Image 1 (cartoon, rainbow, N blue to C red):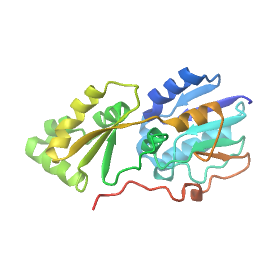
Image 2 (image 1 turned 90 degrees about the vertical axis):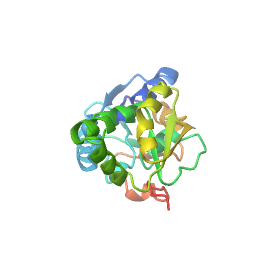
Image 3 (image 1 turned 120 degrees about the horizontal axis):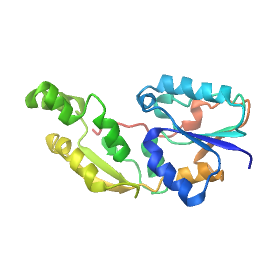
Image 4 (image 1 turned 30 degrees about the vertical axis):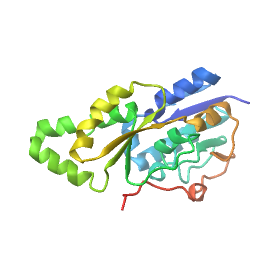
Length: 223
């Protein structure tokens, strides 16, 4: 296989590094700016620019899924591209587990914890800025309909640290916290280049259609 390059969402960094250490990869690996994670349009524009300006890679592997349609309509202008056939990064982590994604669920990993800590909806930060009562009222409204929390155990971080961070929010919402295995098998497919139906492979000059994600379920609120 020719020279390859990987561009990945920062929330998958630990799992991607673990995969590369396990099976090897001699190409370039770049982690995208964390700000792009919450801006699908900007993510799309950034990815398309990366593809368009490519002069070295014979294939670009994009470890960003259908999150907010960020990868939809990407054009493989300079080389073939490969993308996980998943709705979002949570689905990437659950691949290979055989677990059906629960409705009305909030998922968290260490990467997501770090993302939340730096966001405007961090529990401790809100309490400091607004006071306990106003912060709790805001969070109850924000997470209305969500009570089931899941830590995805990818084997790459300390679960207790993440549990300690998220438990105050779980208790506030009267929710539950459960651990799920996260084998992230699709990353092995992407890194190795041994693709199956879990990977969308677009040839040079092709376009990634939104219909490649047909049948995948977005996050829904539990009835």
